[in-house]
Length: 215
Image (cartoon, rainbow, N blue to C red; front, side):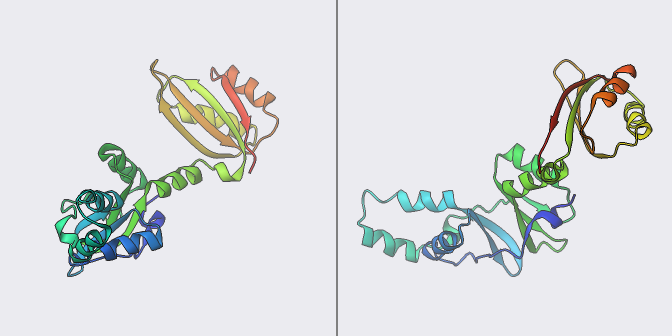
């Protein structure tokens, strides 16, 4: 799954000469948390709702509301924008975007094309929706959990059991456990799992948890 298919394309952008007051209004009216700053078709910075809150609040104790509004109407985005923007290419995977956000503790990424032009924005909400789709959560199905030891041929052996019983696997993911094993989560088109549980246990792959997820 690629970033291009999950991002919000053609996002609203601003220039470095946009006033802070105008940028604040754009964010407020559109319920945005970030705005890419573009000059000459290229990404040159980013401003977030946190940046705007910081500059709006800092002089509040010394200035009247009228003086503050006047100041914000004169100040430019170039005075407060972040010039080092963490971005990602349209051809990157959703997993790469998730890792970037996780490592940098940010809630969104500007997406750029091969020419460096802004193509979209992908946020933590988009990543979460992608995870839901990848896991097949909206389609219901039965969720099976197996705690197994990773080895060559593991997927083949488990899949053979499902194939022999004519059971369709709709998704399969796994992650490492602290004890060195892996937890494998399988979603399948099955309601009564009794015979499947017996067959997998006979192969050395007992099911540790079963839940039927409603769509």
